[in-house]
Length: 184
Image 1 (cartoon, rainbow, N blue to C red):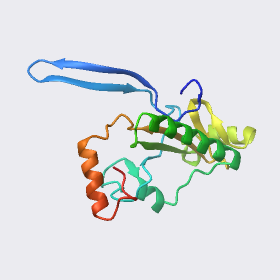
Image 2 (cartoon, rainbow, N blue to C red):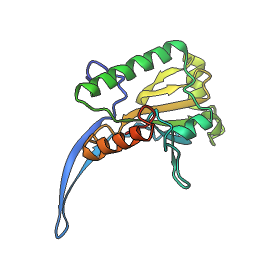
Image 3 (cartoon, helix red, strand yellow):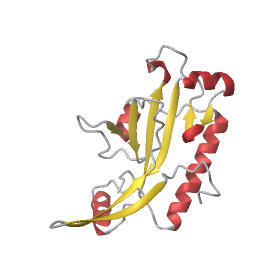
């Protein structure tokens, strides 16, 4: 999939590891490549699932959620061409995951606000905007149409199984009348 879709939003995994800890047991963990570019401070982070049910960041959480995204009036400010390309890639990624019966994932969106650069020099986003009119840039980042923001976008949390706990949560949400707007 990644060879056919080089701009895929699926996060890249570097490895899956097992650690045996004496007197505790074994645990497994994954190592993923960051979707962010360390040259640009990420001013806002969102974990978006497409559901408004219980999807608001709690006090002190640095990563906001769907309700926060909507209440702030955010949207990806992209040209029509780039927006169509982003949608097509997202659909290809979702179809790929669906082939493996993966139904649950999040979009991690990081936003770098070019106006908040402290350097005093023209921001890389503004410089790129002048040349290209927005769109894709290195590290799979997207520059807003007006050049004021850089968006870092990746699909995450798709390795979480849809096991008995998630199935029960979905049945409960459906019984509560939230079957179509819950993200289980």
